[in-house]
Image (cartoon, rainbow, N blue to C red):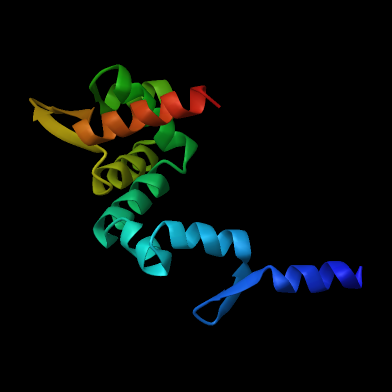
Length: 134
């Protein structure tokens, strides 16, 4: 047991002030070191957008709304009938999806017709595809 500990200490390297295993240190060096990792991060605005979208998708009701809107644009009355929920609760969920930039509403007479944004449609199609391959 003591030999294993000594061997694992030998196989460690320092990156900055942090000791890490040798194989990890080697892989970090192959991608440009810590600076390369930092450069590979998405821009902060992209991270914030991802956060809003994943938070919006974190509720089963909102996922159902998005799934319905993948089929076709719908008015609130149809979404309400399918999900069987109160106006105020549905309005709350639609507002979160709108703020996330996943849906948009267009006034048509007395009705607002909700539709997925193009970016949300692409995102949801990719997510469905990714999940079906698991």
